[in-house]
Image (cartoon, rainbow, N blue to C red; front, side, top):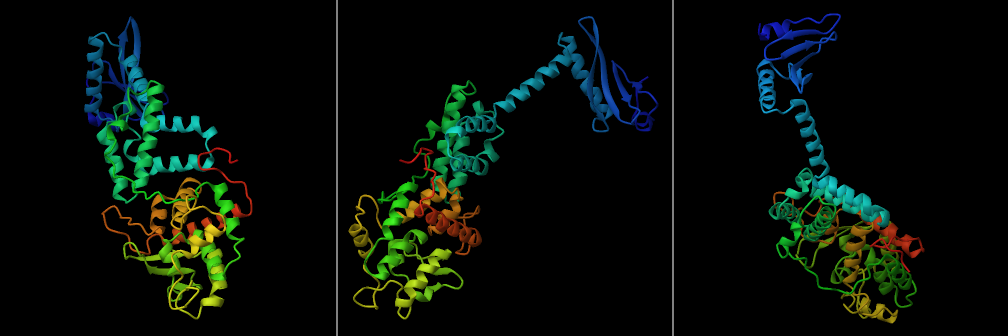
Length: 405
């Protein structure tokens, strides 16, 4: 006699498992604990076997019968439904093991021993933020160039063009590892050459290797010229604003008690905020004693009515023996961008905000000047502390994970 929904709902457990038969080998097993499990009894290869078809009420009577019928179709084709299930489970496990995220994490694990810890964490963070949410669960061999481009477009939409290129570069490395280990046939990132927005670079001379930065900072401290130029030299790497913005800094825009410098960025004409680290405030208080009564923080040596010349800091660096092809006034920005990302591991969008570059929200709107101010304040203090450690001779982690000479 076939089962009914009422009979299933009202079935009571006993001291031992109770079997309520339906038809075609399907039955409901009621455990002493009250749990109800659908099972199918069948014969294959001369042996009696059983196959679990799901728990009641998650699987109702109608669905249990459909699963029974599917299993019996396999039997009719001389396929053991139990073994077929094992093979499907193994295939799913293999599929998961060959997902983009699984292969990526395997690639990271193999390279971690030769990478600096900060380099590893930077790559993991980039993949987790920008790649895994969309491609992580996909079989790596099935991912196409258009899917990769869509991923990169999302990053570009945030204004992080360089991050988009770096994410694509990491994907290419992961695909090539997958090809080498037999999980993919080819690297589709090669099909996207020229598809991303170019990273604009003016190739300004800049010191970006930490051990060279340490030498540069110590050199600045040996400057024997005027107090204003020395303070400008020491402040430049701490705030990494555009050279013209530094030399034209006005006291009215600086609040030392609040540790903030607010002004209109010269390139785009947008309001900008520079959180001032403790070290930057100390330098500004020192020069304030000399120039605080005037308009400019760093006035011209000839008149307090004009800012120092655009050549003042460059000339000071040349007198210190720093060649023009080694470091430019604009180079402090490249220095900060590279090390904040590659060594200290700060988010690219925070760095771009602090560089006064246009960064847009997911809806394409430009963030206002107060965006992520708390996070940027922490970043600027960490940056200043890091420079102090470099200058004091602390052991540094090179950008590419190689030991510095």
